[in-house]
Image (cartoon, rainbow, N blue to C red; front, side):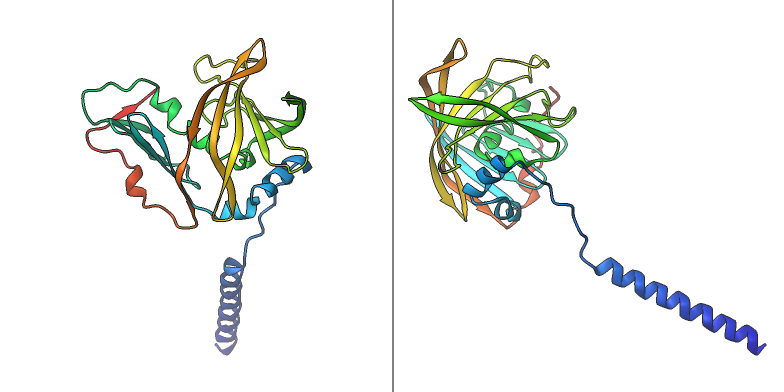
Length: 262
């Protein structure tokens, strides 16, 4: 009988030790593999404040002044949930679906599913080019006004994002490594790769909470593959980037909003 009790006691002690060991292991920090980026894009990230600072941020918002009123964009940087408030409409992404709310009888001219993260993506350059599923390669330099800007071409693995066939080329100042231009293709509508690049000049920047973010974006005309004249300028005001998470309620579909399927 004593032997049986002793055996039970030993088994209980071993089980207890294993349980405590498991608890300790669960509380230990998990080692996450750090992604290694090419030297050039790493220097671009650093010139804009660094990925460590960007990765600490959970929320981003900005205002784009427009002729008929302000367009206010709010984004959860981790889930990429978004909300765009406009004078006559609101567009949101709740993490699964895109929705459109009409505030009056004015029809929305555009595709909400295409637009809901478009300006965020352009604005959050170069940091969104650190996302998973991205491949980098050197690209031919861009020459503009007698200056050469080295290029980094970005492509995506199949299934990444709404349009994984999209391609981007980030051009940077060779002296400061600040982003200077962005070349990009649009494949959302055709669902096919394109060789027609559009170009945005990143001409002005602003310091916000340790990060260098755009103040203005300038779209340029392209003729026979060459950049010609400026055609549009977009300004960004009241920029906020924060370590605090936004309340998810702002991304939820309002009762009267419609779900956008395509």
